[in-house]
Length: 379
Image 1 (cartoon, rainbow, N blue to C red):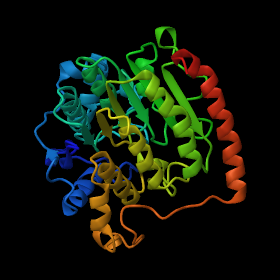
Image 2: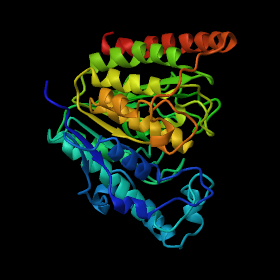
Image 3: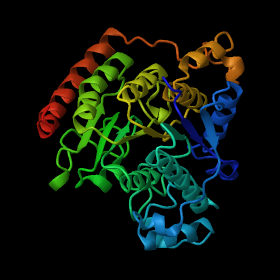
């Protein structure tokens, strides 16, 4: 079998920008990930770093975002904002105004579009932009640390060349911006596994939200109870995502691998280890479709970087090499003394009460999703 052609999309230009120091979102995660992967030899051979990309130009951004919003976003990033910017979600705790935010967001979007171009052209089997995944941005407003929705733009670029695109989101937060963009369409299906909106921003993404009009049944939501653990999560993933992927037959998959779903993340309440994330990625790759991965959330930086590195090794078929390299090095290699077991988290078995509560609620959710969505796809 030929080696997987994998493109890691990153540029030192992205490292010029950062969110304010008191903001939980740390854009430097991507640079730390690149350094780790390079140190492990996971950016060599068929796994290549791609630096040659440009910021998404205005005409591309306007394929999703309104001209008025982009004007205000650009002005705000230069220190000029009025009350209209506040109405568009700028200047809040989760969408602070900072110098360079427009340039950074457009560049991050350009990286995801470059990844889409490589996938669409058949030049890469997988592509990963860890600086992408801004799934909360809407056409005319920001939200949840997201200003420009690179995911929507990447899906639109893929659709120019490919027939069907499946977006799978394992970030702890619901992909409200992406889902809304394609809620009335069939050519882009969205599937999101996220902590329930009853407890977590953005308060959306319930099983009954299945899209509308022509798109009814092509928006799929699996809200997870707090405390969801690996075994329960993967059972739900296999029951929902795998049959839908088989029935839908996407030309390509876009996957948001936000690491805020991991236990210990300060902004969510799930109990997953990165082993569950890696297995979800492996299941998606097992269908043999090209995969465009983006980063997303993850607010415990060490855990996030380690989880992304593990998922990259699975994406590009280099997991055994990674495990051989990291064996015995653990936190020394990762620059952390928290965990000495390499990239994979230690197992986190649930307690009896946790298992009972999670299993009951998640089983009900899975059956509801099947009843609402599966008949649309002949499952």
